[in-house]
Amino acid sequence: MGLKIRKILVSALYDKLGKLSMKSVTSTNSGKLITLVSGDIFMVERGLAFSPMIITTPITNLAVVILVGVT
Image 1 (cartoon, rainbow, N blue to C red):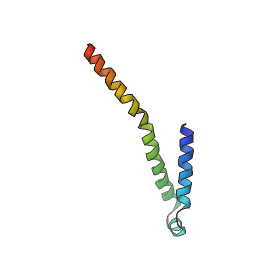
Image 2: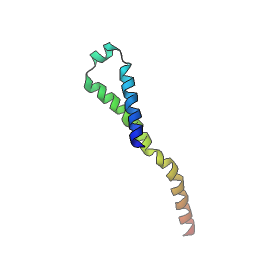
Image 3: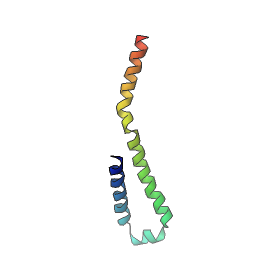
Image 4: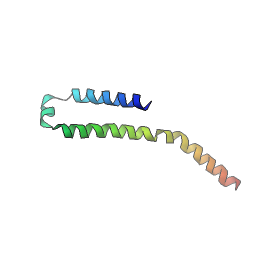
């Protein structure tokens, strides 16, 4: 699943770079472009990494409340 998401992100990256004008590509060096795009991909992947916590956090909180209530 992670590889599929990365493949989608990389293809979106190439689409984004393909839409840049020739002036913006020539005025910016490749290092800056790579840094900008990798930052975009990192932010998306970071959000996806925390998505399982959305499901597990309420379950963990409920278990702790029950444990505290029992003790």
